[in-house]
Length: 397
Ligand code: AMP
Image 1 (cartoon, rainbow, N blue to C red):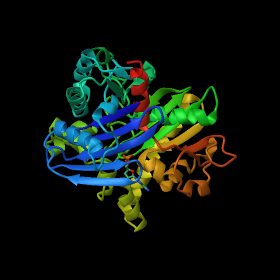
Image 2: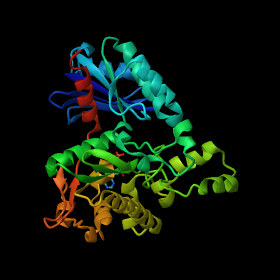
Image 3: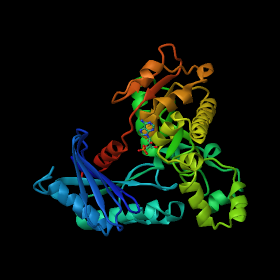
Image 4: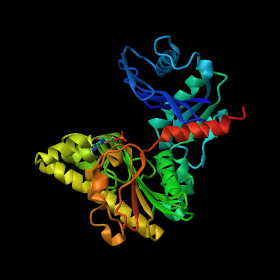
């Protein structure tokens, strides 16, 4: 069954065409700078890469272009878009409405719209993606897969903020958590490897956006992102945890509006803000090796924050069977993994430096044989989860 996966952002969209039954990736790509100029990077299978630079004024034209490329003589991987049997959409915020993936109905769209105040940038773009697909492929079912759904198993003591309770009941103020599809995929792979009924797993999703998740017996019990994806770890351009008092202080000192302070904390902070070099950790690691002091501090701060979450989640669960690293930094940076694990031997966390430095594809263990807590690198695959959920919800249609 061929499933088209769509992740529509404000000026970009990511897509994949997957055979959900066999997990075969037929094609994937990224359209960027929609409405500005337009660039489409398309990959067929794992090797053939094509780049198209052409004006792409709207998301609708972007999706039409992708569908043409999938079916066009020279670039085709399918003969007709009629071969697409279902469409899976990545939706950022499902609030408390959605505890799992769901077939898109008018009521589902209405609920995603109601959640726009909680995800003002993402949910409108996600809805636009759904509506365009409904227009271009009216007979094909759409499925919504939510970034927040996996964390809906968190209980009040872990998702409430310590502010007046009425703001939870009246204004939905609480921790929701994000990267749920990734945390689900990685923890589920780990459960399979551990082959253990009761498991305590901590997933470190470390990419441009980063979050940690405590997963007990397959369920998220706490995670570092909050009401929005700004809370928690130090990220590419996001500050993560910060004293809320910083906000009025800076607004007054620098005469900033609420949008400007949000921009400051979301886009100018984190790795970019501290290092002053880049939001791309590779560049900061390079600068640090060349002796740049602020880059060194950035890396130490980043790893200390991850360590703080690891220890607090191990405490929350009363131990930890496995720690997993995933996403761009987690999968590729042996340095960050080493710095995070270093010093945690007292908790039974022993990294094998040789295994850690080997670059290999696929799931792999990087802990010492004697390590009580296993350490794994598990490449994430959110699209596969979306494809499988879409397949399972639509196969009887
Ligand atoms: P993602 O958002 O998952 O694509 O991850 C992007 C982040 O991964 C960027 O900060 C990259 O600098 C980082 N990254 C990718 N490869 C490496 C690497 N070999 N070492 C350190 N960071 C890396």
